[in-house]
Length: 615
Image (cartoon, rainbow, N blue to C red):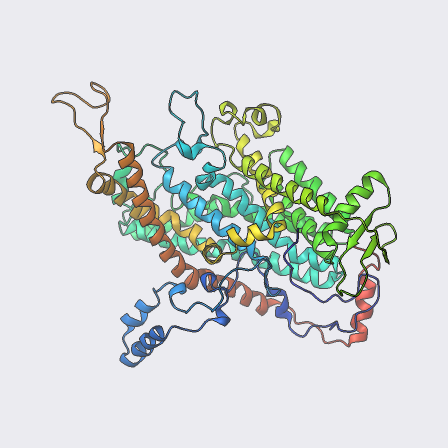
């Protein structure tokens, strides 16, 4: 059976039928209520599911007490290096459930973000060593692209550029979810306050953490942390694409000056082209995400007073328009907002026959015939009821019709949409027009505005369809994206994204050649005296492909463990602090709400909010 995880319950000022809700507080005393949800920040602890249900480990408490008694700053600092998931005991029942907690946003979105970040990590780790991660499987490539990890679906484990589109779709979904939810409940006043808060904090939320990471990278490069990694460039082991690496400046003044100019060019909000800075080329996505967020906020504000059907339609038209003209980033953000609107519409029909209502209305719109649905009764003594979708009232009957085959059909359609989205996300980054299975998409179905970057269009389409289908398949979402590992990766995803590049370019580039040569025995066999490998004699490798793959696996595991360790520290020390700083800055500048009576508030809201069906 189809179901959508329950969203955060919010109290509307006016009920959907136009009557006033007596249980609603028209003037919430806590202005911080607007800050309870952020776009990609959650104070949950991932592997622990809920910090409030966890207790500190007794051994951990003893170590902290010993540090305080001894007064050792070294020990106290060392304890802060322990990852967050090792500090607390797990709760009694950490098993993910099908539906998420009402107090939090959809947990599957955190898991999607975490898995996508892991895929980006895989791509950036492999890209300097092999170009097979950007090509698809092609048996006509003279044996060059015939590896298992190049098949559709299997290639998604390292399809990093597709994962970036999924990032953007999730951000567009989450940024618009609360606003659309409030608008659908006709609480425009609070919706505008929530959107204003997001707009004010968005720049700080996106730019403050990477600013800290860029400063750390620049200082580390000046101290020589990146020098050993330069040996990989041009070496036999660099079979892929070399990414920018920071040069070591002669003095601290030159380092800070170049850092300032690079940061200024990178954070320029008016440059819509990707900006790859030498300190961390992976940060090109941050300014693009900021600009797309601003366009999304403007679109949400402009459609706030419209009915849900018109708002969703206009947002969808904007999404298609952006994709048609090659603006894939904005199109993905708007597509995420459309999916949020659609999911909230389905969730608003939360009744014993909610999924039947959706299917029935589709059938009713096509055939314009009367559709009678069987609804199971809550009491065994009560006869089954039939819902007339045209009249909207149940009536007793003894010969109802059932729509269970339609339920199976609807679920099958969702699975097909999910598989289609994964296929589109599998579109190769290079040579897609000559890759079997994607030639038709490349030659006939891609807008001309994308030129050689046709993969961007299909990754955008795939990410939108993926975000649409996953929350509507809750058991799949709970199994894949709501497990403790995915949730933890989702919590630290932004820190993981910011830290994986520096770890790979400093430690990874320096250690990987040593792993190849000294651990797994992969190296070039020297030719006879007087000959040069590659010119006078063919290049011969010791260790073969199995040794090469084993060396990459060992290096990948080493970098992943260290990156998660560093990202956890960065998350607790910088990322969470930047979010709190942004909130504190807004609270220091915001005008406090006026204290008015409940009657005045209701009258004011009735004057502002149109008394018509919004959804």
